[in-house]
Length: 101
Image (cartoon, rainbow, N blue to C red; front, side):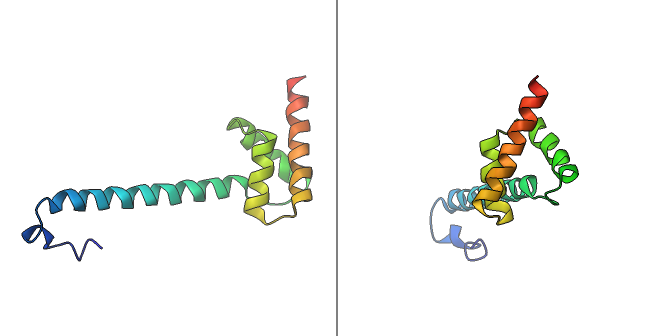
């Protein structure tokens, strides 16, 4: 879209403002996409064995994620059945409770 606006300032006053607004919107969109990718990677599971989950549990705990955050993230990211995601979320809650003792 910016290519079409290259010579726009000749024809429309304050075209620079429009260009700046478009660049800001593109930057915001790129930041949102990067944030979404980061979130997807956060909840991506290498497997469901205890050894594989413990490393993810530590990562989630370091970021202050709740068991509800984990359940929703796993369900959306990994394409698991809801019951499987809930089971892992419950295991994460047990992990957090054990650390609190």
